Amino acid sequence: MRFPRLVHFPRNLRSIHTNIQPLNLYSKSPLIRPHNPPLSSDIRSSIAKPDDFLFWPNFFNVEESKILLSMALWKLDRVDSTLKRRKKGKSSSISQNPVRVDELQSLFDREYGFEDGHYDSVIHNYRETLLSSLPTSSSSNLKSTLAKLYSLLPNLPPFDQQNIPPEGTITHLLHLSPKGEILPHVDNLEASGSVICGVSLGAERTLRLKMKDEEADGWDIKLTNGSVYLQRDSIRYNYEHSILPYSSAGSIWNDERLKEGHRISIMIRDTPSKPAEL
Ligand code: OGA
Ligand code: MN
Image (cartoon, rainbow, N blue to C red; front, side, top):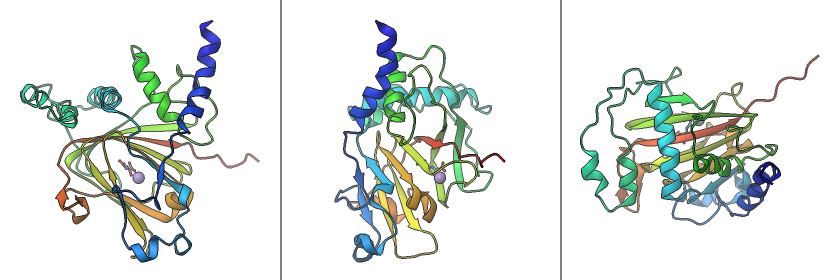
């Protein structure tokens, strides 16, 4: 019988995927570096609780990344009024490149209308849209890939794959141009709850976490394609996060600067809890 299997699928999925052990800020990994090792590697000296930042470096493989990226570009292009529907004509030579991550860059094949500054001037050179529903023709691959993502969110009741994005979540698609950056900020307190989950697709970028009004405490995380991070509570409220420009020293890993390119993040937040009714 199909129907009961569909109903139970997300629950099974959740238990499978929570078994993938994420890294945290205190994990030893070439993708995570504390700004000030003697201070911040000592858990007791930091108010950052280990479980308040979780990082899955290879959560999605290249095929899954392509599925998500294509959906995001389709949604973003629909609301991009300045988009010139003209291919740059470079894509065929790029797609012959054997490096698979370059294959993802070849999906960015138009001249996009990036905005210069966010309403609050935190995000520069970007396009953004809300993911309120999936295209009706969405493939079951897209639905199951997204279900795998939403299954990471803590405290979310079981949801049906046909109902994506699940109730209680707000999902944004954010396209950062190669020239783009996100300045240090804490996400608006009224607009979202205590959990922020981000998927990185396309070019690599450095995410910087820095304790508010504190020079010493912080980390850089190298956001690779297909990685997912989740920040909540102590990190979400007491640390500012930023996405560094390629020109920053923080964009150098192992003596090499990250390769400039387009990046799309899928940002999922929980809806803020409403004040109790009187
Ligand atoms: C944001 C933000 C981070 C990212 O949109 O508020 O911080 O990983 N995004 O794109
Ligand atoms: Mn943010």
